[in-house]
Length: 188
Length: 367
Image (cartoon, rainbow over all chains, first blue to last red; front, top):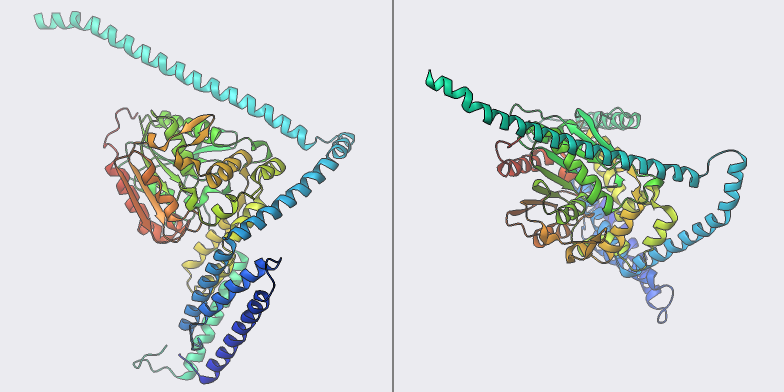
């Protein structure tokens, strides 16, 4: 079923070239910027992408049959996965992500702080328990469950001790009665 | 593809291709309808103990010769549900252990809610796990058991063993569990970064909500979904592949919340400061010294694991004092190493044999 044709390969190579040219253009554009600038992250990103493109296009012949298409797609996906891992595993990305999350959390925290008292009042008026009250009930339930668990364990310990004591009592009894019961048999 | 022996005309080839395309389209429709969805977690079990959200399940041995000591499976906490360990019958880890004759127990940490923000290593390693061990032993009458810890179940179990020198545990199997968090891959870069606001996150949300958990794991492998569906495309004609795909895909998108205190310790003490491997990790004020662990250990790493890279998993070998220890690295990812069909051929028999050799043939006081 291999249908390799010159037309397909030409088309593939044209696409290859336009993709690498675009990536190269962005890399050049950002690399011409003066020292330390806010586009530093983007510059790094375009460089990584350019490297990725050149890796993806090692294959010079257009994948026209299912097997080579699968190989091409698998290799491309693997390569892009590695590219993203390189990009997102870097210090800059981690710091930016941490800062973004911190800003998001700060905004959420402030909002919550601002609306919480009013929300409590509203819920009280509507006769609905608030999150705080439900959590307080859950705390009480946890405490009760903990006490029950401890009591159950103690009970198991007591039962085990009792079982051991009765077993040892039975052994002692057997030991004291055994000679008396054996002697007559021996005598007989 | 035609071979010289096959006299396939171009029209035959076109017809074949049309039929295959129709079959693939039919399978897409069936997937969308959920026709390939099978019952997951179908191995028979009974609930034998619970505390808060934590559940201890008992799975019955399915072999004539029952192993003398039970097996306790300690999975990860939060992130996702533990039914990946009993996904489909032909690739179920738990079922495989039952078929090997083990009385198998699963410690399911449950789905944490806002009220569980206080759950951390203090509860998991010093309360829930020891109680589950005690309950398992009292139910089976055995004096010792073996533990199979998976993913974050490994640091939890390692902390328990290090802090409980007389723990009644015969063997430990560590599966894809990170120990050296400096080698923790992308999570080390993100969660271990000084800029990561772990404390604010826990204080604001109480834990890591399912949405954030899902986002974190998707970001870990941004093209993961594309790869999943590309693989599906290539396997659309393979009817045996589709139920496994459906089950794994459903499970992989079924996230659950991680309790706040646990995440705080994981992000700050483990990913950021890597205290466990240094012997400086503290649980309830007590120092966790992995060198106190002396029991036989089997460590299983996955070569393509991007969640707990093999090097991070293998580190357990170097920090414990056990003399009987073995490391096995298998091909596969974090989940496929124990939940794939290959696992049932490779990992399960190997693991079962390793345990059997190290377990006495008769338990001293099994009732």
